[in-house]
Length: 463
Ligand SMILES: Cc1cc2nc3c(=O)[nH]c(=O)nc-3n(C[C@H](O)[C@H](O)[C@H](O)COP(=O)(O)OP(=O)(O)OC[C@H]3O[C@@H](n4cnc5c(N)ncnc54)[C@H](O)[C@@H]3O)c2cc1C
Image (tube, rainbow, N blue to C red; front, side):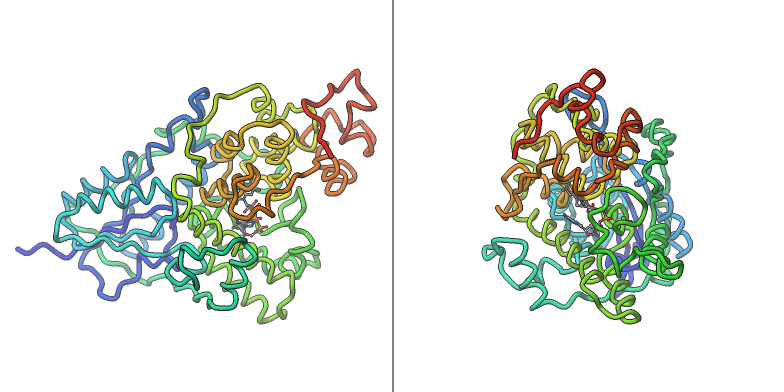
């Protein structure tokens, strides 16, 4: 009997069925196995001096919800999802050995580890198996960028202008209505979350964050619909018509889109978000504010493509330095600057932080406390539900002064920022209850008016 023509679909941060090019075929295989391998390197400590895993509890929880929901979707389409924990290249090589597929399909990754895994698998494949590496997770495919890598634009603005002039963002693809059957005798299985980390199974976001992220494609689409369409109906000044005004907010569910967690795990694709914004604009008219959502998605594209150029250099190349007192105070929210401490407590207890707060805490760590930026980036990697290597390490590189566009390397005077973005001190009092009884004008500098209760900060921001 001849072997059926089998494809293996190797998933990473592309945990969706709609607009997933890996699931669209010019000539469908006779059988198809879909696999997600949780990379055991992500279960190692985020730092040699600490026990927490690179994949912190908030991240694991969201990831597992996303993977579980995807399995349900695939089962409904006649397929399934095999989930494994281990070395992705080795697990994949073993599957290929057992199934002898005609083809393995995988999304292109700009990140060094994932790209190395793909190369390692390629080196082990037998002659009869092809490896298709497909651009699947950016607005513009790397191969469609209107310049060669060696002509990479000197700034984000130059990148954006070229792309906006020369590229059309492709429309997203609908989900397939059916998928090829599971190969006979191929294994199935899904390790329960408790086996990975008991802490993650019980992890809950602090309700002060006012947002509960649920992983998966359906929750991502629900958020997309809700953010774009729900506010106007109830007369709220939020959503795409107000995005540019509200996006620098600090607290609440709707000051920004909150799409990042679903984009990062690929439960939503950036093209789906772009298309949904265009649909909104078709009924409301385009405005600067709605355009700004696509503008921000182009930042994401910029970091993804730039990561390709940076390779392992994205992560700063050297080993992480030891933890020190200033860093430990920063991550625990004990620097004495309420604006920084509130944000760091929010980060560790919700897994999310606004862009404004991310920029301030990063600047304070690097520029005021003089700590190596890579420790900050690694801590964010542990905590952030929306962790995305190119966006996280790319943004941190700017703060560390090694970004590709020197104009982005700005110093933030965090007290000035606190006065501007949290004038009544509501944000800091929400996360630091000791401030609640202070008048608004003292909440950002409590050590000045009440030195007996509030210690001087570790470093006062310089002008
Ligand atoms: C130090 C630092 C670390 C960061 N780490 C991450 C990370 O790990 N993952 C991540 O998705 N974003 C990261 N960002 C970018 C940004 O802060 C988040 O994307 C944003 O706060 C997520 O909230 P949102 O979805 O409501 O964003 P919105 O303001 O609604 O933006 C819409 C989308 O545009 C993209 N986007 C917006 N700003 C940026 C940016 N500066 N860089 C790249 N993409 C952007 C995101 O996909 C986001 O979901 C980081 C920023 C800084 C300063």
